[in-house]
Amino acid sequence: MKIWVDADACPNPIKEILFRAAGRTGVSLILVANHEIRIKPSRHISFLRVSPGFDVADNEIVRRLEAGDLVITGDIPLAAEIIDNHGQALSPRGELFTRDNIRARLTMRDLMESLRASGIDSGGQAPLSQADRKTFADQLDRMLARHV
Image (cartoon, rainbow, N blue to C red):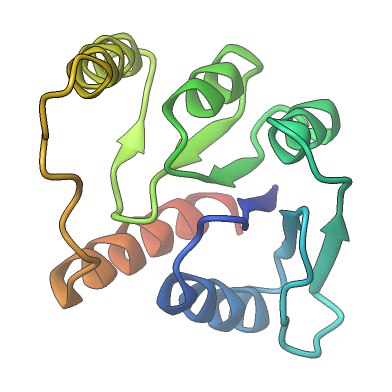
């Protein structure tokens, strides 16, 4: 299993958790972004810079994904594509996307996008909390324990 990170929007505290996990377990961690990202020096951690553009990083992750790989992303359409390609998707807040919940998440995302487009302020997502970080770290540890 490799861990791919949709790194353009991944919060730094989540990247730190991932750096520590890669060092601890030896799992390959690849951050993908269209701008420079600082990574910890490690033989288990790498960075793949893609050209700027809409969904370029997402498309590169999908292209390189192998069955069973884990992708860290808050992008619901990308998560759906990962699941369709036999990968696993985990949000930076620790929500595991599955075949059972991804369609509902896509529907909710589309609804919220429609509301925003019509001028309704949905307030946006709350800042990443300490509880979110713990939830993410716990879920990541469970997933790594099954695959390492």
